Each structure stands twice: as C-alpha cells, then as structure tokens.
Amino acid sequence: MAIPKNVTSIGDRAFYRCTSLTAIDVAALNPVYGSFEGVLFNKSQTTLILCPPDKTGAYTIPGSVTTIGDEAFLSCTGLTSIVIPNGVTSIGDGAFADCRSLTSLTIGNRVTSIGPYVFSGCSGLTHVTIPDSVRSIGDWAFADCTSLTSVTIPDSVFSIGEQAFRFCASLTSVTIGNSVTRIGQAAFQFCTSLTSVTIPDSVTRIGDWAFRGCGRLARLTIPDSVIHLDGGAFSECTSLISIVIPDSVTIIGSEAFSGCSGLTNVVIGNGVNTIGYCAFRGCAGLTSVSIPESVTNIQRGAFHGLSSLTAIGVHAANPAYCSPEGVLLSKAQDRVMQYPQGRVGSYVILASVTTIDAEAFSGCRWLTGVVIPGSVTSIDYAVFSGCSCLTNVVIGNGVTNIGVDAFSGCIGLTSLTIPDGVTSIESGAFSTAPI
Image (cartoon, rainbow, N blue to C red; front, top):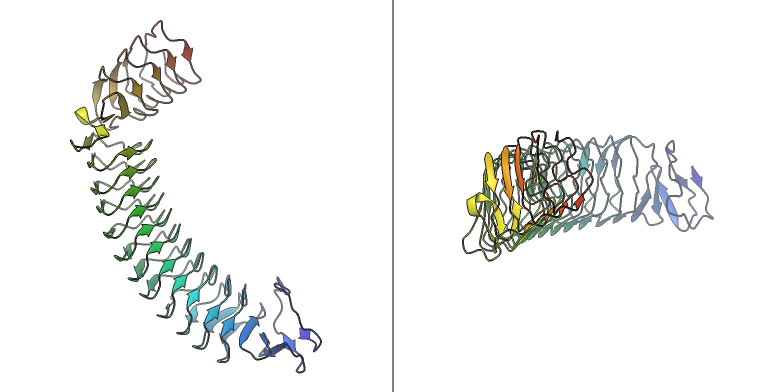
C-alpha cells in the first residue's frame, strides 16, 4: 500500500482486517508520516503506528522509537520474534494482541507499563522477561497466552490488572514481586497447570476469582498482609489440601473457596469477621470447621455442600454463634443455620429454635430422622432437600407453611403426618418423595 504525500491524517483502525497487507510505503515528501521496511511511523520515526498484518518472521523495532501505538501489531500472525529496544517507554493498548506465532519477545528496559491487552492472545509465547522498569501490568495484558510456562513479576510492579494472565493454561509457576499490593480480578483465572505461586507480604487484597479454576494449585501461603479475600478468589482449586487464613484477613468473600473439593484442613484466622455467601460450598473433603470468636457474620450457604463435614465448632466466646452438638446455631439458639452434612443418625431440634434457615439440612444424606419443635412456624426453601435417608419426620404443631422444595429428593420418606395448623404447602415441597 502506498500513502501519498498529501495524506496528513490516518484514523484508528484505518487498515483494520487488511490481513493480506504486507507493506506500507509513505511518499518521501509526506510531512506527517514515514515508513521503514514497510512499517508505518510518524515522520520522525519516534512512534510506530502500524505494522502490516501479513508481515512475517523476526522484526526489530528501530532504536529511534519511543512509543508503540495502540494495536500497532494487532493480529500480525506471521511474526515470530519481536525486539523492543531500550528507547521505548510506552506500549499502546493491544499493541501485540493476537500475534499467535510470536515465540520470542524482548522488552526494553525503559518500558514503564504493560497496558491492557498488549500481549493477549499471543498463544505461541512460551517465555517473557518483564524488565525492572515496569510499574504496572494492565487488564488482559497476557490473557490467553496459552503456551506461557512461567512468569516472574519484578519488584518494580505495583499492580496486576484484571484477567492479566487469564487462560494461560501452560503456566506452572508464578513469582509475584514484593511491591504488588493487589492481585486483580480473575488475574490468574483458569491457569489450569499452575502448581506454585508466591504471594509476597506486600499484597493486601486478592481480587474476585483471582485464582479460580487453578486445579493443580496444591500449596498456597496467604501472607499476613492480606486483608480481603474477594469473591471466588480460590474457587475450584481442587488440588488445595490445606489452607491457613491469617489473622490479618477480615473478610472471606463469597465463594472464596467454593468447589475446593480436595481441601481437608482449613484454619480461619482470629481477625475474620465475615464469611461470605457459599464461601466453602462444595469443599467435600472438610470433616470439621472451627469458627473463631471474631466471626459475627456468616452468610447463607457458607458451609453448604460439605458432604464429609461431621461437626462445626464455634469458639465459646463468639458473640453471634454457637454450636451445640456440632450444629451451627445463632447465639440465642433460636435459629438453625447449618447441620453438618456428613453426620449420621437423627436429630432433635432444640425447643428454643423458631427459625430454620433455607437449605440448613440440604444434602444431609445420612440424616435418618428429625424432630421439628412446635416453636418453628415455617419450613423454608429446600430445608431438607436431598436428605435421601430421611425416613422419620415429626413436624411440630406450630408449623403453618411448608416451603418450596422443602423435602424434595427425600426418597426414603414413605409417610408423614402434617399438622392441622399447616395452611400452605408450596411447589415441589415433596417432589420425588414417595409419600
């Protein structure tokens, strides 16, 4: 393509999807633009504007360049090697996105930021050295670099953006430098080969879904600097066996460890005040849980789906909760929150109880019998759903409502006496139960 001397303005994506473009040549007298080796620059060749998408092989950016423009090498699928010289200080958004054949990359030592999408989709890239000059790694910066095997983030970096290394499926180890304070949302999500990660003491927040689906991550140390474990931070890390949540952490976010089916031991630090919605849901290997004195807010479903759980312990000095017989109750013992799913036998609900939380006994397949006192007025949503061995239920005379799916899936329940006070039986209350 030839650009004549009178063209003084070229808009963003002017040559977008010109996938067969091999060279751009600018007239020598053009006052704004220039070209060298078929690549488009500004006149002084300090800014690289566009590499033609069909350029192939290795390419070394000229030493005069200080800025690489947004999407400058977007979808240059034939490029195999790039050298970014030390003069470059700025790399534009998406500059090398989808350069799928790129296997070798050298980043100059004056680049201060790797911005959004810069190397996303560079699926052939196996190794990258991030220089000590870099202060931040932007959103999606290395996302979908599926051949990348290891990353060392230097001490110069302060922040790792959202989804920065998402879907880097070959990534086995990550070393995070000592200046990073926050690991962004989904930063390492679905890095399915990740077995080792070093989180430094500088990190105060681990973002939503940060390590979700890192199924081979077996060992993890959360440093004492961390205050927040955001929602889903380590969900579906199925190889995690043991986790210690330090006293510095105040909030365990929703689904933070949900689906960690290999987890057999968890220590909840004495600084935690909130355990979020479904925080440990599906942690089928946990047999017991101890809740410290500091916890005053346990959200719905925090311990649902723990099929091996036989006891929930609560510190005696906890002001909000207690655990008589290993069952999680409010401190006043007027509310049943969670019955341990792995417990075998029958259970008589305390006469002081007025409320049974939704799904409180859901999935307790070894529960054989239950007595509901007259103080309880409603059997709420799915309270006993999936209690497949439940054969004997006594419903107190105070109950007026049996909620949606209350006894669904109770396939062992062949008879039941419903008190005269019951005025409402909602949809699916006894679905699949043979009574």
